[in-house]
Image (cartoon, rainbow, N blue to C red):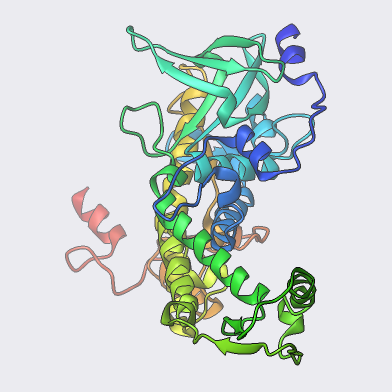
Length: 404
């Protein structure tokens, strides 16, 4: 408990009120070709990045995570297991299961890794306490054991074993240290942020063509300062088209807007699509309905589950099964996400699917009711066999009697 108090028992007196301070907590700076420095913190200020991470985090966060048990050929929820409440209800005293899963996904999307301290008491996991990704440094020893150097808020460090850290990680090149998603895509994110800054600058100056003043004479310091002060009242989109009063022989020389300025919205559209592709989030889920139709949105939603969420879900399940369950339980007792709710199609498609499954004897009515979150009914555990499906011209009963 001394370690827990040392790690989590102190209040953080430093107020994180700038992106630089948050970057210190979440990770490092990345230089980009656009000249914009990208961090895990300011990358979230790019609207498309924020939307993608929010969609992925909330999608995984709302999925029930239960402890399952195999009993022969059947499976059931093992609600009496000590880990069941931790994974499904609350991993610690200050977070719900959904909040913890959302945090895990946010860390994975930004840094490629998430670390939670595993508090063991008498051989049982009693809580999972999340750590800042930048505060943990994993290392692989010569004997292939893994250790973690943890830096505390007061500057002290400790080395923890693999048994004490729940380490989720995405794609790696060495099996341990993940490839940072933000670091690898920093140039695309830098371009997106530079485009945003360009648009903000354009509208800050009234979203109008720029230009300058020309005079035959020379302005005095007083005239120059008064003109400069007056021009400040014309900045901003709210002051567009205000009449400009010129005096002292001043003439306005207008410079046409460049094609690059006129096409920056097209660049932003491209960057939005590119970032959505980086996170594998369908465009319609981040509000981009330009190419969406009623016929393809449902299929994009199914693709989102199968190809965007499932890689994360299976990684989370595998790591939980290895790190939190003892060896004598692994293989028969395991953690499992329930993704049935996300895989449901429209009402008509589901009804047609269930009808065929019942008619072919693949599902019972009660199995359908369970998938639809309905209580079982009496007599609903039967499996139908179509009369036109026979074995060598005989029904199953006749074939069995003939063999006898």
